[in-house]
Image (tube, rainbow, N blue to C red; front, side, top):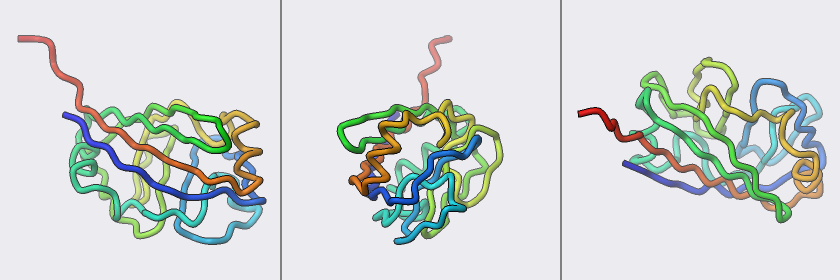
Length: 146
């Protein structure tokens, strides 16, 4: 089983990409220097707006989330896990986390990338205000055991 959704946002001059445990995309139009996890603003979706089929699959402890972040000709792939504890009902924010912490904004846990590990060329594209495309694909792996 698979499901997909796409979120469109843009960068901002204050994108720092420095947070060591998360990255975030938000519907908010502005960003302050304190928001060092935020990589995209003016998103067209928050967690609550994601495709219902995708949200259903993400709410499975076996779910594998592959997120492709594209901006300025750079594409970064992020692997994360889902959780039966996800609510996915925040109206404005989407957050990927390295940890197992879950809130209404969390769309991925145990992520293999966070803001601080994103390539600097990618962050620089976002600082120029480039468009950001966030492609989310969730899959429940098939159990090969009889």
